[in-house]
Amino acid sequence: MSGLERTYRLAARDTKSEPTVVTIGQLRIGEGCPVMIMAGPCTVESREQTLITAHAVKAQGATVLRGGAYKPSTSPYSFQGLGIEGLEILAEAKAETGLAIITEVMDPRNVELVCRYADILQIGTRSMQNYDLLREVGKTQTPVCLKRGMSATLAEWLQAAEYILLGGNPNVILCERGIRTFETYTRNTLDLAAVPSLRELTHLPIIVDPSQGTGRASLVAALSRGAVAVGADGLLIEVHPDPENALKDALQQVTPEEFAALMDGLRPLADAINRGIA
Ligand code: PEP
Ligand code: MN
Image (cartoon, rainbow, N blue to C red; front, side, top):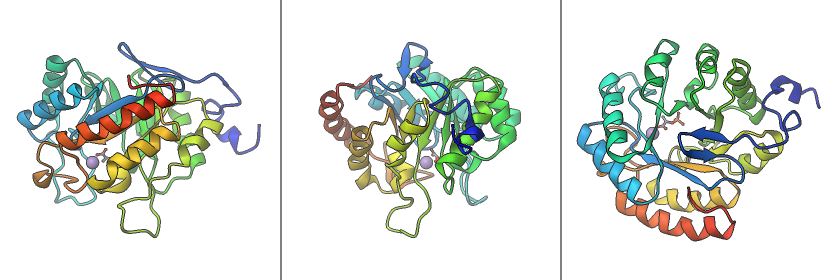
């Protein structure tokens, strides 16, 4: 083991060569499992918006509903999310559709609360280095989706994962969501090379978020196919019934119709690599 890998011992592939498979109810995610589709709005805006989207993504084969109730925002003037009301809406969507829920937790003091609603806790890019938050989610057994910090190297990201693993929570899923580069056409540069690179470095499941990764709805389907082709274990995709009027991330959310077309393009690819879609 090299000196670098010693900084993330539990996350390292040479400590544990067999892939970690994270269980979410009846669902399984990890190397060798079917590709898991997590989809839904960037942000829970209303009951109607969330329920419409939940039914639409479920009909296309998603098994997990995404939606932020607590939203990290670069500007304090933009929408911050509905908070507990948003969590209650997600609970209703789960009860109606049977979809599992992934939602962000930002504040270490809210971990217990969000755990009551979430099947997967999302740690956002801006929180990847919030070590108190990482320690707090490490005390739970709830699966954690740890997004890559927008300027984090793979080693820094794996060290963040190590905080959660060291706390006793083995259920960590890594999510590539794009990094800051000099390019401005896309919101971020989606680092698809991270997927096979992480496969060498870690046993943890790896998913890709092509929505934050590109910032452009028109690119989401192509990057979803790319992510599956390079071996991603799942996708996190933003879907909104009326993207133009979305309260956040209006440019990158796809409509339910676009999501259906995206899924049609994905299925033959997932079958071709002998994984299928969960
Ligand atoms: C999101 O998923 O809507 C989000 C805010 O993601 P990120 O933390 O990757 O920007
Ligand atoms: Mn978003």
